[in-house]
Length: 120
Image 1 (cartoon, rainbow, N blue to C red):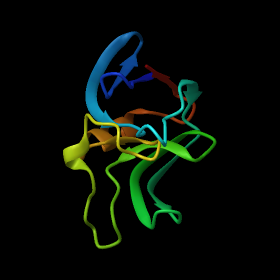
Image 2: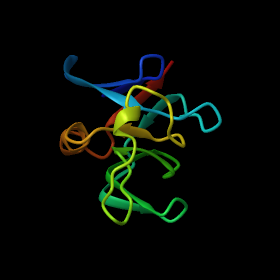
Image 3: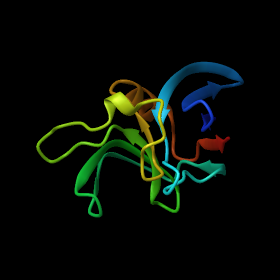
């Protein structure tokens, strides 16, 4: 299970009840809130592209309506990453952003169907 706590901007993941790791995240800002509830990983794409924002979302894992996901820091077409200094602060458009390294770690561990809990 993957648990995202909006109050402390952390993602932790668990196998058989044991916490494997916890990482700082950036979730949705006040006007683009991250959905709260119990979900599941719907699909995984190594380098998804957002037509809406014109950027890539490496290690994409959709968990709600295909529009909200867990992913690495957004990447512009020129390769520049955005938001490393924002981890720990809610600034996204609702997605859950992980830093370099942790995003791939969680992506490699999680399977489609893995439970995702987003809580306050």
